[in-house]
Amino acid sequence: MATGRTHRPATRSRGIPEATVARLPLYLRALTALSERSVPTVSSEELAAAAGVNSAKLRKDFSYLGSYGTRGVGYDVEYLVYQISRELGLTQDWPVVIVGIGNLGAALANYGGFASRGFRVAALIDADPAMAGKPVAGIPVQHSDDLEKIIQDNGVSIGVIATPAGAAQQVCDRLVAAGVTSILNFAPTVLSVPEGVDVRKVDLSIELQILAFHEQRKAGEEAAASDGGVPAAAARSDSADQGPDGDMPAVMPA
Image (cartoon, rainbow, N blue to C red):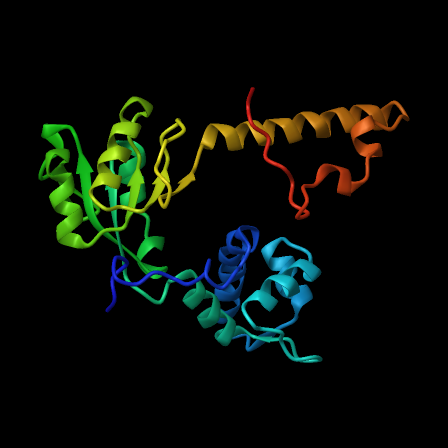
């Protein structure tokens, strides 16, 4: 089976917008659920509702893949699963290393969704000598002193950082120097990387702050409704709250 280091998906060369790429996993998740229920076809409206987007945006996204469905029939579920999986590079074997095997890193190592989506946890790495050799999710933890050799031996191009914030940049620098070109960062800090290296940041505290914002707004709307008034936020049109691509803009802490 091909590894991530020797084969990379041609998404960018095909000119697919990043916003569309970000939605492809949502479509794939919805389609996989349909496939598991042996649903043969699905309309754009049904699939859009399952993925949480509008049908016009879905049809435009699929047009970048060259898939337009059949009028009166819809989209072939199995073919779309294959098509999106291929576009995302999930028909290949992607070896991944997880650096930082604390509570979060251990939870990620135990996540069963990696293997079913084309990712193989090739190694678990931690700086604590006491962790060396300790099995987590059936994989022995290796010391960070061997990080570069581990990456080279396993042909790793995707790294997951689950270290404390203070150690994340140093780990990132070592991963990049060893040849890793894509990083999923769970550390609560912004990483600096050279051109050609992709970083996706997962910050649970920011997501919770966004939810807190929405809860506060809903509470304000309910209070205004009980007083018989209309809050300013509710008076704005939906388009005023959306970005240029129709998505809710990110809410970042000050």
